[in-house]
Image (cartoon, rainbow, N blue to C red; front, side, top):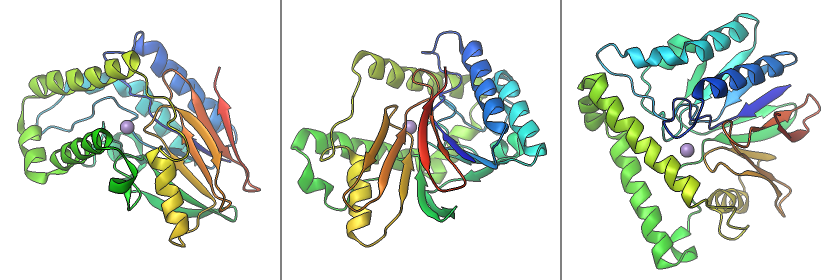
Length: 261
Ligand SMILES: [Mn+2]
């Protein structure tokens, strides 16, 4: 079995009882480990992850999570970690702490006879997105792209990494909390097949002849399992702090969604 989960947002100042959440996540990984060959974490497992040039003791709070990943790794389960838009600032640290293989870009893999496209999902758009959305949505998307460029800029990353962790974290965790609170106060439900960016991205890929059986994403914090006309399926994983949803690919190539109680 191959398992997929995403968006734990560990360490979030907007999640009450963070310890209980981390414990539940560890339990979920334990359950998966009973029959897992590999486990894919598709981004935003941390609400804010930055690797500074100075020692950052706040990382200690995640020790139980990393310990669990190393345990599973020792038992022969392959762990894959995709960076999201909240934890893209890893420069080898996560690999070292968890034993996971870290992916900085989306990737396509073939397992059990199926082609899978895996990505966190931030920044993925169909080619003609500017014709598809009204002006106000376009502006939002453009701002997100701008911000994404800033986040990925090597010079600015260097500057941020040089900060004392105390300052950097204050800024980072507050920024992440704001986005979490915004989401809680103004939830953005599934926008429908002709508006949801990740669905449109998948449709665009299919129309270009890049067929995949499954597109699996995180990022949106909504569980979705949608069959496209091309035969492909788009799965958005939900999250592991409120919905507790994940997906499982069995050795016959069937993909199913589950909720962890
Ligand atoms: Mn995200």
